Image (cartoon, rainbow, N blue to C red; front, side, top):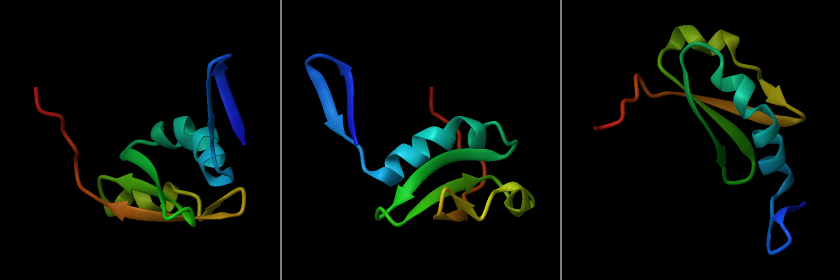
Length: 78
């Protein structure tokens, strides 16, 4: 899918990237979700702080499988 922000700034997004972008905000609202990514264009990855969060994550999004990776708490450095 061709995405254009301005007349001079266009780039291609694969279908899975579009699906990830469409659901990322709602996934990040789930307490304990710390990130969302894509695995080799085959699955959407949801990074969570603990195993307790896993039941709250959907198994698929628009036909793409969802993989959950428990990372623990992620903090940024000042």
